[in-house]
Every structure is written in C-alpha cells, then in structure tokens.
Image (cartoon, rainbow, N blue to C red):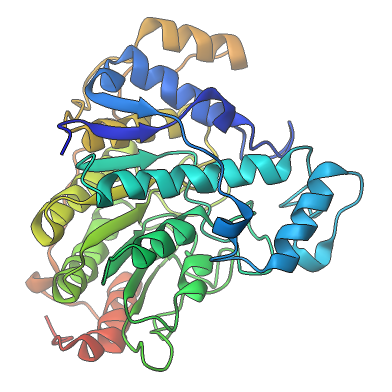
Length: 391
C-alpha cells in the first residue's frame, strides 16, 4: 500500500456549474484547493485525476432513461425537464452537464478503487458528495449520485459491508433510498430535522426496508444545534452502530453547510466543531476497518469564509497531517478572497471555539429537544442492531 492518501482532483472538476447566481458556486472547490496547496497539505497527498463514469457505470445506480434525458439536456440546455428535476431553480440545466456530473461520479469511484485495492490508505473527492440524486431524477443540486456509485462499485468488487456516514446539514436521502433494502450498506445521516429543512425526510423511524431493518439510521437535529449538541448526538449514535455493523470500509460525506454562517441551513456549528467531526470519523475508520476510508465533499454555501477552511482541514486529516486550528491562513489566499469580494478573509483556520460535549452516558434530559431526538434514533434502530437503546 502507498504511504500517501489520495486526493482525486483536477481543474476540470470545477466545471459542475449551475451558473453565477446559484449557491453551489464552484469557486468553493477552487478556493479549497488553493488554500490546501498554500498550507502544504497537498505535499502530503497523491493528487490524481479520474476518468468520467461511463453510461455502463452510471446504470449501476441510475435508470437508462434518466441518463439519456440528462445527455439530451446537456447537449441542448435550452429547456428543462421538471419531471426529472432538471430546469428547476435548484437544478438549472447547463452545457456539458452530463460530462461534469459523470466526472464527479467517476472521481468518487476512483477514490473508492484506490482504497479498496490497497493503493492508498485513505482517499477524498471534495467535488463529490452529491447525495440527493435519485435513481430517476435530480434533486437538491445533485444530478448523478457519486457516493452511491462508489458504494455500488465497492459491493461489486468484493466489499461485504459498507458503512456510509453523512454529516451534511441536509438528509442524505438519495443514498438512503438507493440502498434502503440492502443490508450490506449501513447508511447513517446526522442532519437538521425534516420539519425545518429540505428534503423533508430523515426521520428516526426511517430504519431500512424489508430484510434490511436497522441498516438506515437517521439523527434529526433541532435547528440551532451547535458544536456541543452535534457532537453529543454523533457520539451517542454513530460509533456504537458502526462498531456493531463492523464494515469492511467507510465512505463519508462532509457537507459543511452545518456551519453557523451557512445561508441555507439553521445549524450552528463552527469550523472547529466540523474539524472535530472529521477527526472522529478518521478515528472510527481506524478502529473498525483498518483505516480504509473514502471521504467526499457535499453541501456548503458560505463559499469563501467556511468551505475552504473546513475542507482544507478535511484534506489534511485524510492526508494524515492535521492542521493546527490556530494556523494563520496564507497571505496570498487572503488577498484572493479580498479581491473576489472586497472584504477581508479569515485570519486563521479556526473560529476561535473550544470544542467539547457532554457524553450521552452522563444522562438523558427528556426536556431537551436534542436529547429527545437522539433517544428517538436510539429507540428506533439500536434494538434492530442488537444494541441497548438506554444510556
């Protein structure tokens, strides 16, 4: 096995572009890579390109009819087709849409292949994490579901148990739906609750289909949940379930739209809390599957202040060389931000918060919305996995 982790990236991966007014601006990828490069993070990784997923590849997840329609709209992006979720405000059509989406999907497959075949200990595709795409339609800024395709590739190539953990503020509904009836895939999503945020799913009661009961795990957080509450929920649910599942490999989605400055969501995490979540997932992968870990990006719409710093931390953790949160951001990178928006960039890799949380074992408060949400998840899925839902 190579000593270096892999980043799957080349400049063409910023071509997934819904237009200048869309919140998912590709500049967030560009700024992440430039920050990571200037901090020296990329020196500790093998940076590789990937081929786009073929139609045969995409057919493992998406219907042939849907792929054909995406192709046609991509070649002639004049009119949309709302019946497949394209040409909407969330998912405008654009030229080369199929090619850009297939490239993101191919990159996640390549990231999975590198780890599964032992060519790298860990891998990451920050342009991936497009977790809302369904078998036959686009949804929530996502056209092809790259993470689901990577998981399917792993299953097709010998993996018997794959654990997928999604920490995006939005429910990972597409990945859940695509594997809802497959007991070989554990899908865990920790997200803002469906009462207050798209896509309106991800209740604790969504626990897996027939024959796969307990394989779908959802932690629906109250709006306003901050670092301490998020980490309390994470540690109360995710490690016990993943340990019991005993996966061969972990695939994770790291949408950083849980940040308090994100314009589309209502969670209140800091970059420091997000960094802590990445470290927790790294440690869990080390514990349960020998460190075999495939990470992806996802949501994140505070595209200058938050996304580049959060994902630079993710890249550094995947690389095995975490960045000190107190590190000063590079002057050249700050100058670029100032030029792009006319105001100052963050001075450090931290939001200045000390991150801690109260362990679930220290007591359950039934008056707390957060604790009731955690307990709802434990009650719904722990017995299905042979675990005690009580603290």
